[in-house]
Amino acid sequence: MDGERMFEPALALASAKSRQDLSAAMRLFHPDMVLETPAFGTKVRGLDANREVLTKFFASFPDYSVTLEGHASNGEALICWGTVRMTMTGERFGVTPNGEQAELPVFIQFEFKDGLIARERFFFDLSALCAQSGVSTDAVREKLFGRLAASAAM
Image (cartoon, rainbow, N blue to C red):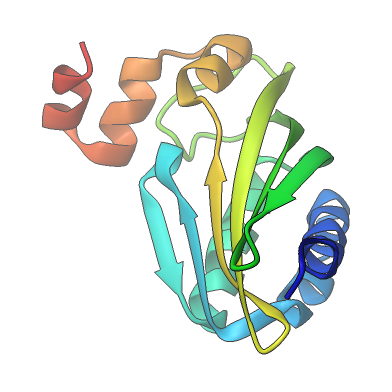
Protein backbone atom coordinates (compact mmCIF):
# COMPACT_ATOMS: atom_id res chain seq x y z
CA MET A 1 0.00 0.00 0.00
CA ASP A 2 1.24 3.49 -0.68
CA GLY A 3 1.35 6.10 2.06
CA GLU A 4 -1.83 7.94 1.08
CA ARG A 5 -3.81 4.69 0.88
CA MET A 6 -2.48 3.79 4.34
CA PHE A 7 -3.41 7.18 5.73
CA GLU A 8 -7.10 6.83 4.81
CA PRO A 9 -7.90 4.01 7.29
CA ALA A 10 -5.65 5.62 9.93
CA LEU A 11 -7.60 8.86 9.61
CA ALA A 12 -10.89 6.95 9.70
CA LEU A 13 -9.74 5.18 12.87
CA ALA A 14 -8.75 8.47 14.49
CA SER A 15 -12.20 9.84 13.68
CA ALA A 16 -14.01 6.73 14.98
CA LYS A 17 -12.02 6.69 18.22
CA SER A 18 -12.55 10.43 18.70
CA ARG A 19 -16.31 9.73 18.55
CA GLN A 20 -15.86 6.65 20.79
CA ASP A 21 -17.52 4.72 17.96
CA LEU A 22 -16.30 1.24 18.76
CA SER A 23 -18.19 -0.42 15.90
CA ALA A 24 -16.68 1.90 13.29
CA ALA A 25 -13.19 1.35 14.73
CA MET A 26 -13.58 -2.43 14.75
CA ARG A 27 -14.56 -2.50 11.06
CA LEU A 28 -11.11 -1.07 10.22
CA PHE A 29 -9.23 -3.87 12.01
CA HIS A 30 -7.78 -7.04 10.53
CA PRO A 31 -8.88 -10.18 12.45
CA ASP A 32 -5.31 -10.55 13.78
CA MET A 33 -5.17 -6.90 14.88
CA VAL A 34 -2.49 -6.09 17.46
CA LEU A 35 -2.98 -2.97 19.57
CA GLU A 36 -0.04 -1.92 21.70
CA THR A 37 0.11 1.00 24.13
CA PRO A 38 3.56 0.96 25.76
CA ALA A 39 2.66 3.74 28.22
CA PHE A 40 0.01 1.45 29.74
CA GLY A 41 1.97 -1.76 29.21
CA THR A 42 -0.80 -3.25 27.08
CA LYS A 43 -0.54 -5.41 23.99
CA VAL A 44 -3.57 -7.31 22.73
CA ARG A 45 -4.23 -9.42 19.65
CA GLY A 46 -7.50 -10.27 17.94
CA LEU A 47 -10.82 -8.55 17.57
CA ASP A 48 -12.33 -9.63 20.91
CA ALA A 49 -9.30 -8.45 22.91
CA ASN A 50 -9.21 -5.17 20.99
CA ARG A 51 -12.92 -4.56 21.64
CA GLU A 52 -12.38 -5.20 25.36
CA VAL A 53 -9.33 -2.93 25.73
CA LEU A 54 -10.92 -0.10 23.73
CA THR A 55 -14.11 -0.34 25.81
CA LYS A 56 -12.02 0.07 28.99
CA PHE A 57 -10.01 2.89 27.39
CA PHE A 58 -13.14 4.85 26.42
CA ALA A 59 -14.55 4.36 29.95
CA SER A 60 -11.34 5.80 31.40
CA PHE A 61 -11.09 8.63 28.83
CA PRO A 62 -14.67 9.40 27.70
CA ASP A 63 -13.72 12.63 25.89
CA TYR A 64 -10.72 11.13 24.04
CA SER A 65 -9.97 12.84 20.75
CA VAL A 66 -6.96 12.77 18.50
CA THR A 67 -5.90 15.10 15.72
CA LEU A 68 -3.45 13.69 13.21
CA GLU A 69 -1.17 16.49 12.03
CA GLY A 70 1.21 14.63 9.75
CA HIS A 71 2.30 11.25 8.49
CA ALA A 72 5.10 9.41 6.72
CA SER A 73 5.36 5.96 5.20
CA ASN A 74 7.99 3.59 3.89
CA GLY A 75 5.46 1.48 1.98
CA GLU A 76 5.19 -1.09 4.76
CA ALA A 77 4.34 0.99 7.80
CA LEU A 78 2.73 4.35 8.42
CA ILE A 79 3.74 6.75 11.18
CA CYS A 80 1.30 9.49 12.18
CA TRP A 81 1.83 12.27 14.66
CA GLY A 82 -0.47 14.74 16.26
CA THR A 83 -2.19 15.75 19.46
CA VAL A 84 -4.38 13.73 21.79
CA ARG A 85 -6.82 15.31 24.23
CA MET A 86 -8.32 13.22 27.00
CA THR A 87 -9.56 13.47 30.55
CA MET A 88 -8.60 10.68 32.94
CA THR A 89 -11.67 9.57 34.91
CA GLY A 90 -12.47 6.93 37.49
CA GLU A 91 -9.96 5.03 39.56
CA ARG A 92 -8.77 2.48 36.97
CA PHE A 93 -5.19 3.61 37.50
CA GLY A 94 -5.35 3.54 41.30
CA VAL A 95 -5.55 7.33 41.65
CA THR A 96 -8.19 10.06 41.71
CA PRO A 97 -7.61 12.45 38.79
CA ASN A 98 -8.38 16.18 38.89
CA GLY A 99 -10.91 16.06 36.01
CA GLU A 100 -8.84 18.36 33.78
CA GLN A 101 -8.39 17.51 30.12
CA ALA A 102 -4.80 16.63 29.19
CA GLU A 103 -3.31 17.62 25.86
CA LEU A 104 -0.34 15.56 24.71
CA PRO A 105 1.78 14.96 21.64
CA VAL A 106 1.22 11.49 20.22
CA PHE A 107 2.68 9.32 17.53
CA ILE A 108 1.16 6.16 16.16
CA GLN A 109 2.71 3.40 14.08
CA PHE A 110 0.38 1.42 11.82
CA GLU A 111 0.89 -1.75 9.80
CA PHE A 112 -1.64 -3.16 7.35
CA LYS A 113 -2.78 -6.51 6.01
CA ASP A 114 -5.44 -7.12 3.36
CA GLY A 115 -6.20 -3.39 3.29
CA LEU A 116 -7.06 -3.33 7.02
CA ILE A 117 -5.16 -2.11 10.06
CA ALA A 118 -3.22 -5.09 11.41
CA ARG A 119 -1.14 -3.30 14.06
CA GLU A 120 -1.33 -0.03 15.94
CA ARG A 121 1.38 1.10 18.36
CA PHE A 122 0.15 4.17 20.24
CA PHE A 123 2.88 6.26 21.91
CA PHE A 124 2.46 9.14 24.36
CA ASP A 125 4.16 10.35 27.55
CA LEU A 126 2.53 8.76 30.61
CA SER A 127 4.27 11.23 32.94
CA ALA A 128 2.80 14.20 31.04
CA LEU A 129 -0.67 12.62 31.19
CA CYS A 130 -0.31 12.08 34.94
CA ALA A 131 1.02 15.60 35.57
CA GLN A 132 -1.84 17.22 33.66
CA SER A 133 -4.34 14.90 35.41
CA GLY A 134 -3.01 15.85 38.85
CA VAL A 135 -1.94 12.33 39.79
CA SER A 136 1.31 10.66 40.76
CA THR A 137 3.13 8.99 37.89
CA ASP A 138 4.72 6.61 40.39
CA ALA A 139 1.30 5.55 41.71
CA VAL A 140 -0.02 4.96 38.19
CA ARG A 141 3.11 3.04 37.15
CA GLU A 142 2.78 0.89 40.28
CA LYS A 143 -0.85 0.09 39.42
CA LEU A 144 0.02 -0.70 35.78
CA PHE A 145 3.37 -2.45 36.18
CA GLY A 146 3.75 -3.36 39.85
CA ARG A 147 5.88 -2.03 42.68
CA LEU A 148 9.25 -3.08 41.22
CA ALA A 149 8.64 -1.28 37.92
CA ALA A 150 7.58 1.91 39.70
CA SER A 151 10.72 1.79 41.87
CA ALA A 152 12.96 1.19 38.84
CA ALA A 153 11.63 4.34 37.16
CA MET A 154 13.00 6.54 39.94
